[in-house]
Length: 263
Ligand SMILES: [Fe+2]
Image (cartoon, rainbow, N blue to C red):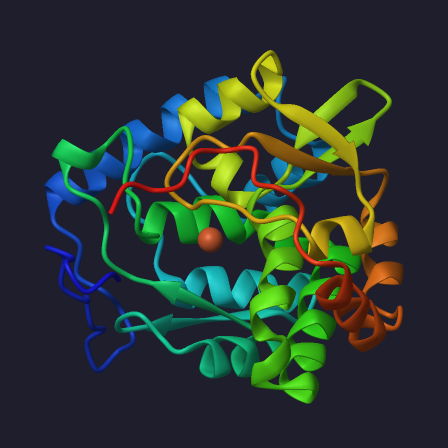
């Protein structure tokens, strides 16, 4: 949640359940239906299978305890509701423990098409389905462990790995290029732009290149990095990440392909 956010954190009751209103259930349902229709030929099979495994439906906002239980049963991963923006150190710590931190508030209708801060739809619909895939879940956990081990001086660069995979990753499949990043699968404009491909660039995933690529969070992405498999992600995170970050720092960033944000 950003400092200027007009949203407040939703807290669970003593039974661990969150109280969502009928309006919030309706907003979730609309978002769910719209994205599932759009993603049928855009998202990778592992993601779409994950939506089914989690038992997500258009009927109502899912409860974190249910998502947590299903993830635990499939890959041993879990989720943890977080009340507000959390510092990077806590974010990485939770990932290293195999827990994905989730904001629990849902966007209002005025933000149904776009919301800059991650809400429950982005978190659960975007992030959780792929955590049912063992290679992907292993990658996310090892990423967290690496970030905790390397500490603050590496945090900025490490987040680029997260950004160009977990948030905005694409994957080559026998059916063509498909999306898996949460920022794509949870956003109609991003999904359409990434699949249309006329105003963006697709690059094969290369660790050093990713570490040198700046990005902006508030625009449709001009660059996507494409993997060939989730096993590839699992292998990448076992590489010498510390050495790669040092090399990226010494070589410097690529020139941004976007305009600087107006201040
Ligand atoms: Fe996210």
